[in-house]
Length: 167
Length: 275
Image (spheres, one colour):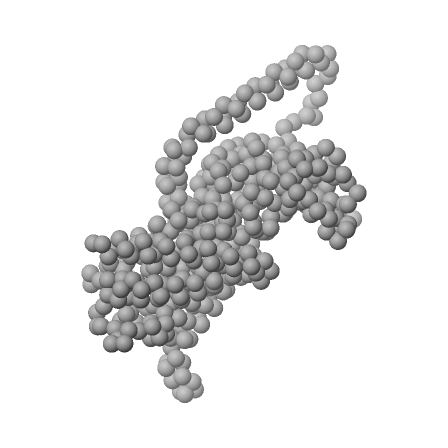
């Protein structure tokens, strides 16, 4: 029960952080951080798959409502929620995941977590920026935005995880 | 049929995924139509109030800068008033034209949400239908144009700013009145493009581009941008880069302009089209 509440709290906190602060940070039009994906990354292993999709969709849609880009964030979030179980299967440690553990730095170490986050964030940002542009002209400019924004988001994610780790 | 249902059940994760992606895609496509204005009306009742309280804090921090801008504008207006008074005194004996009336009415609004980093940016204002805001009104600051009102709810309105790939406005070179059309490439929040200026026109870096007043939305002569660069496309028309005179990343208070003659003009022009 407490676990569920933590994730609901996570949802609200990351959503507000995203729409009130991060959406207003932008360096020269290329770098936008989307820290809210951390919510999808941190959902526990035993989350039912349908719940994974539903919560990712709700998160994306909420960000969309504030950004007035209806559907774009929802699309990208659902994509990574779909990929997540398969990815977790691929990068599982040799002894597998312990029951009750969570996909964060505390359980599997920084290196594992960064590998996990890099892949999902890159996919998310790639889908996000290309559905936003909706066409492939200016391909490389959009690509540059994907790379730079992913870096920024990843830095934020790793920093936030280090804060938790210290405690 | 049963087999089909069993198939759906065993692959429920994949099908649920398709349902959600399909729905998102549907939303994205709907988004490009003007139904979005309807949706925004509903969602703004919710998000608008949160943004407004956040903006109260930010507005306080920007007080000093806003005071400075207001003082400058005040001085400029006083100067204008002084010149007009002198002209009126000189023309005391001329007849007062009774058909003269105000064409544009201005009122101020506050920006409570603003994005500049996306391809299709939007601005939210704290005035809505209750305050007399209607779709297709012009939005400017004293430094230049900002955009056009698109969706209106009772207390809030959204503005399609110049930093939106759907935005188009006619502009002209200030010193020789040549017409072109201004749009945004979606790359740089400081820069937009003026196209359709024929190659024989002489242009210089640093020339000002202003609105034409043909669109019934913007009054004539409101600055849009300053020419920073230009080159010929296909040898016939210039592609001109403009630096926007109004920095949309920093706007706080804007003026919304109502064209009081708009219905009259559009009715007359409609009549022409029918004949």
